[in-house]
Length: 94
Image 1: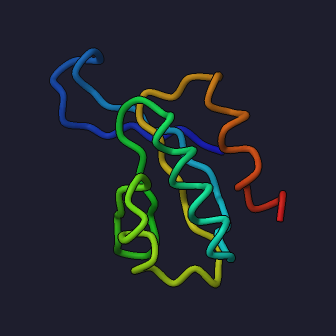
Image 2 (image 1 turned 45 degrees about the vertical axis):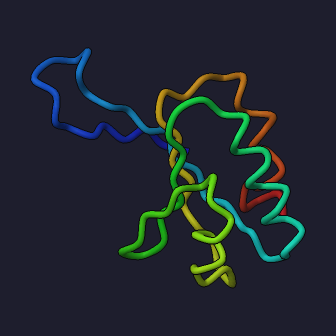
C-alpha cells in the first residue's frame, strides 16, 4: 500500500491524496461483491490497469478490463474505516 499525491492544487488543502492497493478480481461474483463494497466508500474510487483508469463503482467499467492479473485500487480521501471493506480483495488474500 502506498500514498500518491495528485498535484493540481496551489496549496495542501487543494491537493488530492490517493491510497493505492494491489487487488485481484478473478471471479464474476467477486467483481459483483467488490462493486457493492466500493459503493460504501465516500468519494472517488478508481481501478488502474495499464493506461486505463476506471471508476471502481462501475461494474461495466471493471468488466472492460483484463481481470486475469493484479489491478491497482486507488481511494481518494482514505479513512482507516475502509480497511475492512477492501481487505478481502487485496492481492495477498487470494
